[in-house]
Image (tube, rainbow, N blue to C red; front, side, top):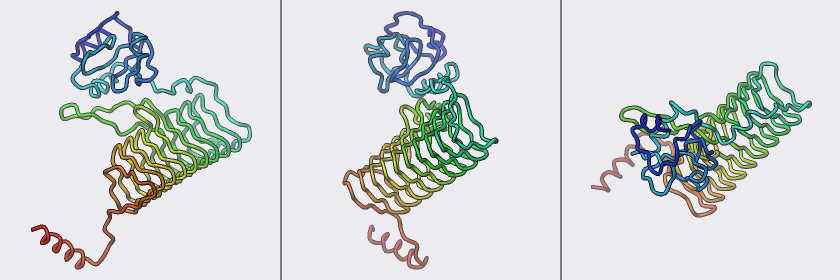
Length: 310
């Protein structure tokens, strides 16, 4: 621990002992020999003797005090491997149902579980610790990583990527440092994800797509987001990290949903809209895109708008 403190240019407060640190772990469930960080640190971390990256010492035991906690967390990955919350799945026995149909060209990692009647087409990549339920269909070239869990009767389109690291970076001068993804992706029963969609693993928690959702081609679901049951998201929509979409929502094509936004149940957002603030009224309908029209009419509208503001 003392070596790490020196490398970070940090200071150590409330030191109990020089702990031999083995991993960087998420705040919930960090062990006695793991380093974590104080965004949402629970009491267990202080009690077990693990070191904690903090902005100020407070009452934390083995507090490694730094100027920027998230930047320090990203830098630490050069010396301590991050441990995913569900890493234990990688060490379990591989279990492939006898009735599953698995292409010979598919990659099946250690500790993978595949349920009855599931079809795994050619070129599919299943990382260590992935769990696939019964009667799923994984189309050619789909890529599932990071101990992701798929429920029953899930269909994943060709070329879809699930469970890769989230797009979470912190600035270090002119450079960008990647935050590790500690979480995974959880997909409920009866979900359909069409071709070339991307669902990032959670950085702090899990990214969740609840039961009965349908995601169109080229949809992007950012890290730590939550998509409520039976919601539909059309093509090329991007949902930024930590956004929460309620149950039964309908999101049109090419919609942008900003980081941390919350959308109530039953909301409809029409195509080409940009959602930068939470929508709290259930069943509401929101639009912000301009429909296509003749260029002359468009520029006339722009000119009239500008004159109205003068």
